[in-house]
Image (cartoon, rainbow, N blue to C red):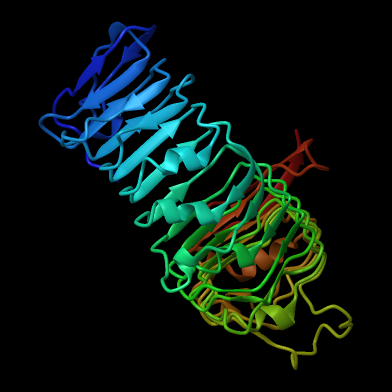
Length: 419
């Protein structure tokens, strides 16, 4: 979080177009506010006399100029629809600009050599992003180019990276126009901890890379049908987000990626549970499979539902999301999930719940299902377990919108009736 200004900053202006400038003390983060001041300018020259931070809510300025002798270190411009040029910003540590016209990234980076946190959001930059340009900002640790129009990401070989590892830890390229991404382009950034590629148009993710500190890979809201990450040597990977793609097969991971704790695969086209892949992730704590077309929790090709020789050991799993699938039976005979606290199976045509569900899952506290076809004897049989748990009955299903269901709180039987 950037520091909040304590007093109103100042702005020096020259002649030009009309703009409403808010400086210094507006910051919503501080719960402060500032009054607009109408001036005619085409150059914005913010200063921070008492603090080292300033905010601008809106400006029509076409050029940003920072006094190199001033104390300003952090500048946040929320909307600058005509800003095309920045200069004199060599001493800034943090800069965030939204909604501008900085068409050439290299021109901006050349003026930001000391920057550590840089966010240029929705600034209409397009074409090809060359990551070798980051040699112009050797101290940057966090870079966000969210909401631009980049179609390709490349890296031209640069001697500047030959003998050192850039300090970049966070790279956000979400909401661009990327269709293909080669992980090899981020190979020099071995300090990278989070890579954001959500809300693009990704059809493929390829390449080999060694990223020993990468913790989060965000690929949600793309068009991926399959993902092969066996070339990504990412031993620290903890969170994988594939939500709302078009995956028809499970993603494959390198053998070194054994520390994944959260795997989000919701709202894809998966029709099975991949036991082989899941067995590699014994440390998994959250598994999100909602919104797929899964009809069975048994391994594919297994016809004997009583065969427990093929076990799925997930001893640390705390939450399991299976809602909005095609499950008629909650087949957990092969699942060893003693730590699970939450299971959601609502919005499934569920007809069967294991009689020993609470014995298999002794810590299960939140169980949400839609089960009008479940015999009421099941509920009554588990009255003592239900009394200490939260059992929720979803009231709406796409094919049963003319029915309402309820249960006696904490104990009684499910009852469904026409509206």
